[in-house]
Image (cartoon, protein in one colour):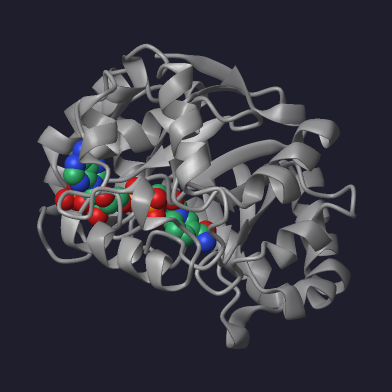
Length: 312
Ligand SMILES: NC(=O)c1ccc[n+]([C@@H]2O[C@H](COP(=O)([O-])OP(=O)(O)OC[C@H]3O[C@@H](n4cnc5c(N)ncnc54)[C@H](OP(=O)(O)O)[C@@H]3O)[C@@H](O)[C@H]2O)c1
C-alpha cells in the first residue's frame, strides 16, 4: 500500500481510505451485513494496510468503526468523522454535543479529522462565524486534531462551497467529489489545495455510475444528450469497456480508482463496500501499477467538458 502525507496535517495516510458511508455503509444501509461482519470487513482492510477511515454521525457506522479500532492500535489509524449540517442541530451547542457523542461511539478520546459535513454555500458564513470558533476550542482541548469540510457534490456540482472555503486559512482537509466522469475539481479545487498544502480526500471515485453498468449507460446517455461528450468517443453497446480492454485495468472500478489515484493533488481515495470480494478487488487496485499515460489522457479527453453529472 502506498502512503502519502495528508497536506499540512503531516499525517501519513494510505492512498486507499475506508469509506464507511456512501451507498454501502459497510453493508449496514440495506442490512446486507451483520454488525460483526461489518467489523470484520473493516479489519480486513486495516490488515491490508488501510490506515484511514471516514465515517460520520449520520451514517450509523461510527460505533462499528469504534469496535474495529478497539481491536487494533488506535494511534496507528487516522479517524475522520463529520458533524451533520442538518438545520436543527447545526448550532454551537449542537456541535459540542455531536462531537462528544462521536467520541463515545468511536470509543476514543480524540478525532484526527473532524469535518463539517456536506456544507452548503449558503451556510458557509454562518459556519465560519458560529461553528468554526467552537471547532477551534475543541481543538485546543485536544479532542480534534485537524479541521475539515466536505462538499455536497450532488447539489454543488460547481464546487462553489469549497471555492469559498479556499479563501480562508482554516481548513486543514477538504473532501472533494471527483472521478473520471466529472473532473471539474481539477482546476477549481485540487490545484488550489496543492498551492495551500491542504489535505484532500476524494469521494465519488466509483460511486454508482462506475460500479453498475446500467447506471453508467444512463450517465453516458445524459452526457451525449447534453452535448458534454461526443458519441463518436464511446462504444454505446458497452460504454468504456474498450478503454478497460485496451489498458491493463481489470474492471471499471479498477480503472476508476487508479485514475483518481494518479490525479495531481489527491491524497486519500475513499472506497466503500459491503462486499468482501469487492474489498479485495479494490485493495488489489490500489496496489497495482499506475495506469499508462495514454489511458489517463484518453479518459481526460472523453470527459473534458463534463459538468452536469456526479456519477450518482
Ligand atoms: N458529502 C460527504 O461528506 C460524502 C458524500 C459521499 C461519500 N462520502 C464518503 O466517501 C466515501 C466513498 O463514497 P462514494 O460515494 O465514493 O461511494 P462508495 O462508498 O465508495 O461506494 C461505492 C459503491 O460501489 C460499489 N463497489 C465498490 N467496490 C466495487 C467493486 N470492486 N465492484 C463493484 N462494485 C463496487 C459498492 O457496492 P458494494 O457494496 O456492492 O461493493 C458501493 O455501492 C463514503 O463511504 C463516505 O465515507 C462523503
